[in-house]
Image (cartoon, rainbow over all chains, first blue to last red; front, side, top):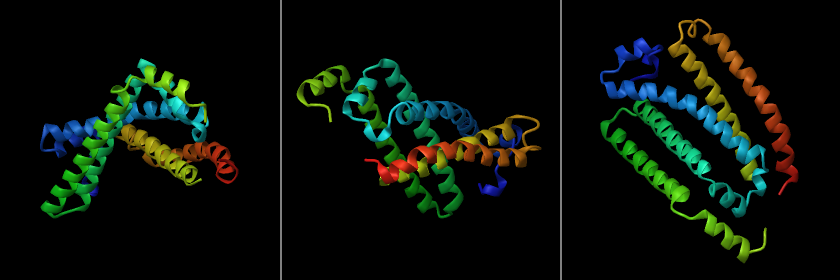
Length: 144
Length: 67
């Protein structure tokens, strides 16, 4: 689908996309985009305005991730941002690359990288006990 | 210092992408969105500038002075 034929309204989108799955992604980009405005806004507020981003250390991150609501909030941010970003890159690949094999391999690479980022993100958020690690850090090393 | 230059660039990109995306949502889902899309694009530029100036005021001194 070339950029010039992008649907402008929901009814045009329904006529344009041959499958419900593509229509679903079209709607998802709008809904997730709206959520991400608030998710990313709060992320910037807590990590760049409330504190100086240059002085964030391990203790600050460990203390934040010890709170369950931060883990849940960051999980939504991770999931929505990755799906929104990957689908946007998929649109760009399909807009700008014509050869089927090029499209296939670029999209394969994209999905592999995205899957790896998702696994690393989920592990970072959920696999460690930050309460314990926070204590260990406080007891073993002086603050930087 | 490279980190803070990247910070300015990513803030500009994210704020523009977010506001332009909201403009596209209004075009897609309201009856009047397409009619006012040109005005809304200029409104996006004004808002990006309005948000960008405090970002520059905070971050640019840190690029030259900060750790």
